[in-house]
Image (cartoon, rainbow, N blue to C red; front, side, top):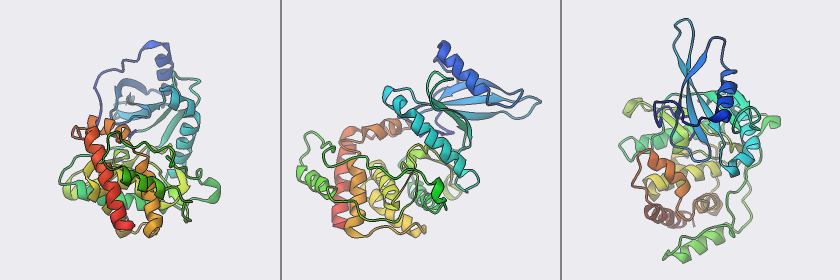
Length: 332
């Protein structure tokens, strides 16, 4: 999650300090209009691949202040890949301007970290907040997620502007089976199922990391609405099934296997791109789910920061295994 309006970690100044951080602030300030200045920096919760900060901007002449979001890749692995990731996100944000998808607008880019302490991107801040609670609005949020994903897949992207071809995030020899599991036969069956050649598909524009942690909402009940879709660094061209599978796995981990299993039907009901059937659709579901093994800890950490302290490694492992079994029961 990168652009959340409701998960600020504090209200004071950023504590990075040092000449590198001062250079980053100077660089970000150069992207502002004359007379504007950054007055506060606030860490944002909910992400794990990059450091996210809210930049509060004061405007002259009594005009209302506003906020931007600064994304910086700081860990060695992601810093190494930052130029490609940030360049891709910047290109996608430009592509999405005026396209009808609630995405941020690009403000500044330093993909190599030459002007900043780390490779960074500044974008506009979107309204709303990430919602991952197990509450009365959860089913409605799933419907809205499905409708928003269908809209993303329907974007008419000219061939010359298509993003990179999709990439798998796991393979049979990379799957990590949970230690101490009593369901090794289930895991072996799932690993065997993704050992085949990928099914043929009709490509479309993919977010590629679409899940509840990357979608912002406003309102509640009848006024509940999607206000933003964030984190476009993995955007790809590929099968709609893959985005549906990724959101389905996340919903299964958040709310139980039934929620994950039902997402494809919600997507179809929303008028989404036609999905594969039977074992072909099962392939994409398993390919995604197995990439979360052994316990989905990488996504659970930010979810816990957002209040889902019930998502322990043991619960996540159990839900992931139950979801795998549910997929076989439904599609095999």
